[in-house]
Amino acid sequence: MQVPPDFRGEWAGSASACGRAGDEARLRVAADRVTFHESAGPVLAVEQHPGREITVRVGLTGEGQARTLARRWRLSPDGATLQDVTEGEGLVRQRCPAARE
Image 1 (cartoon, rainbow, N blue to C red):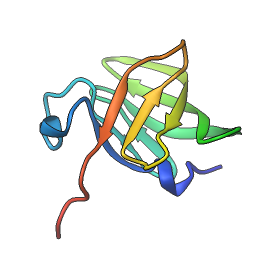
Image 2: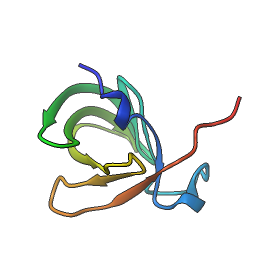
Image 3: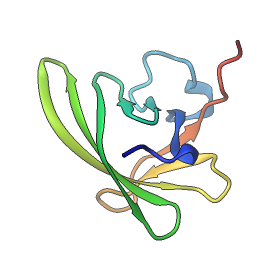
């Protein structure tokens, strides 16, 4: 199972934090991998919900630990923000511009 294309990319706590390694809200979502500030791992499952919401289950390793984490994310209609709604109205991240090559 893969993360849908609209949810993929780099996300940060604010537009000014994009590309800044120390941003604790930083999130990188690939088709088959999720990277948080200090942990990362493969996507184990993706569940689609009504609207622009998914639940992603990730096998994370980092900070000397291994665990499974499930997060429910809501993508804004314009695709500019990603909100963690796992436990109510949570953290909102801004989409970072794609890196220029």
